[in-house]
Image 1 (tube, one colour):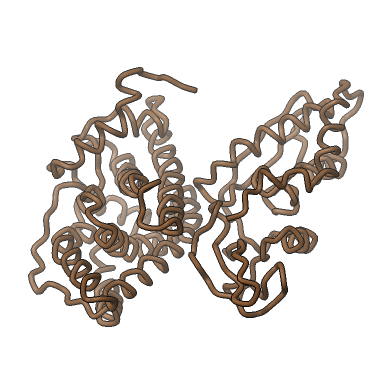
Image 2: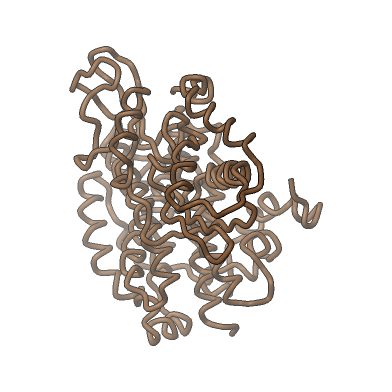
Length: 251
Length: 181
């Protein structure tokens, strides 16, 4: 394993990078203009946070790689994002359900991270909390509005929840990298956040008239980089094509 | 949605000041005081909302001399705000125009920017420009056009990361609301 702090920062930055890219795929094709703008703004926040996380990762690594190098010059097996964020957008409902499931974890995790023993990490977390609070508010409202909406919107939101639920558990798994961060007071234990997440989720899903799947089976392998889903490779072919076709091109 | 770039001409004073700043570029014989530098910065318009200046926005966190180098500390409004690099360029252009040769622009993200740092003058200018200023209550006090208090949210996000979209239910005009963070 490489330096656990570098691994850890890549996990944070790859989550926001891959989700930011996914959400940006809606730019120009969202169902209505307001949603198009909201999705693009969310993506922008996430990419901004990525610059902070991967920028710091590059500094910690000390091999001269900046955020752009890390984003555009690594291959699938080097990415450390959870599997949830690389799942395809599907319809608007599934995109918002994915955002909602991620935002709930992201906000709670970042809030805990503001107490990090590492000042740089605490500062990024503090900055991100403000932005992610907005993301979570909006995704929660949308999940409730569409879940408790028409027969069709309800069905689509339930389908989205059923499909994405097996990817939720990975956000709360803890491994050696987490243990190293916890030991140094750098980051919280993700497993400790599950209880509060579930309680909050149950309340919102009840309001949205949606049913949480009973089976807690969890797909994993994204955060450790052991096994991503096939979708990540397809994302990278789009996201990285320019830097791969014209290495180090700038404009 | 209001296209701010078309309203750029509504901030002629700021622009004239900026133009003056650019042509004054004779080398300085002595270091200007930090107060002078703050005054120069206070006339640089925000690139996306040119009716307010960078100091109105509260993103200039510090101005100091480190030996012969002027250090200006800037904080981003939103981490992904695309205006950040333009703002740095505008600061550099203006200060070079005033004859500053050794300049460092520092990015500081902690404490994170908050709309509490918007000046009162900035808030008033936003309102006059048609953008409802931020309020801790989480929504605009009234429509910036007809002043009606009957307003509703259209979307939590707007034409720039710092704004949300609202609409007046009396005059029916949609308007930007500066998000409170």
